[in-house]
Structure formats: C-alpha cells, structure tokens
Image (tube, rainbow, N blue to C red; front, side):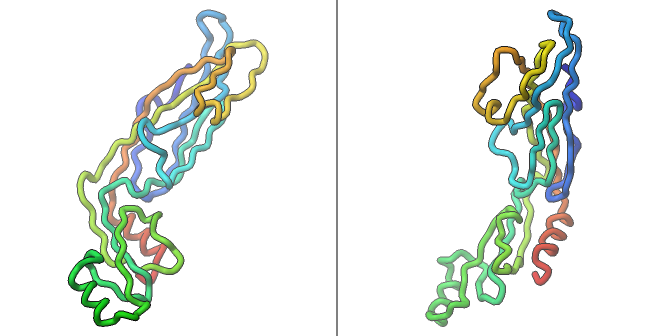
Length: 203
C-alpha cells in the first residue's frame, strides 16, 4: 500500500484556509497476488482532538483535511461587548471595583474577556477587540495518524465507517496499516489581525 504524501502535509499559516489530501494506492499483495483495494482512509491527531477550524473528508482511498487552524498559539486577545464599559484589568482589580462603586446600578459595566482563539469570540452581540498579543513559540508541529483499511478479496467489500474506525472494529476480511504524518503551523500576525477586522469591522 502506497501512502502519499509519506512524511508531511504542506506547511500552513494559522487562520489561513488550506486543503491537503492523503491518498492510498493499492499494490499487488505478496501472499495472494491479488490487488490491495483500499476501503477507508482516516486521519486523527496523535494527541488531543482535531482543531475546531478543521474538517475531515474521508473516502475509501483518500482523506482531505481542510479549513484553518485557530487558537493553536499563545496569543492573547482581549475583548468586551460593544457599547459597554470596561477596564483592562482582572475583575477584582482596583479600577473595576472603582467603576462598580461609582456606577453600582449600571448595566453597561462589563468585565473584559481574554481568549487565544478567534473562533471562541461571540459574534452576537458585537464585541470590541482592543488588544492582541502573541508569545513564542510561533511555529508548532501537529502529528497525525493516518489509518488505511484495505482488502485483497476478489469480490467487493463494504467500506469501513468512521464509527468502526473509532471503535477499533476491523472485519475479518479487512487489513489495516497506520502511518504518522506531520504538519507545520506558522504564526503570521497579519492573518489574525485581518481576520479580526473581517469579523468585527468596527473594532
């Protein structure tokens, strides 16, 4: 069974859309001399869950990873609800407490929020993003496990499903192999900035 690419997926930039595919091509089986026929290719992170900005499209002979990475770096994005009032310090800070004492009944006084992931910021109601910082490392490597299921029967075999894959169910007439690929994700300050401006043009 030939897996392509064999070592790594293309390098990408955080919050930039991409689409990368891994294909499995059968060879002649040494034992049966029949062709190897793939019946499912699946991709999973070696550790943790797949990034929220990504989508997997899995077929009998290929898998495509598309979308964009979000929240993978030590970024710090501060924001608060538009038309509200806040202060840039923790909720128990002197400034915030002073505002609460001065305006005890104000519904416009809110705590500022902090996140490292643009996707976690609500779009309704509109938010004001007023601070953006980044911290090293500004390059990470994500490892993926590629699992290929195939058969060497002369008759057709039903495709493997993701449910079977996740449950570790492998039917008697199906074989499998697993390979590890890597993908490098780079930080580019202009991309988060432009994305934030696109989400929140008034920020």
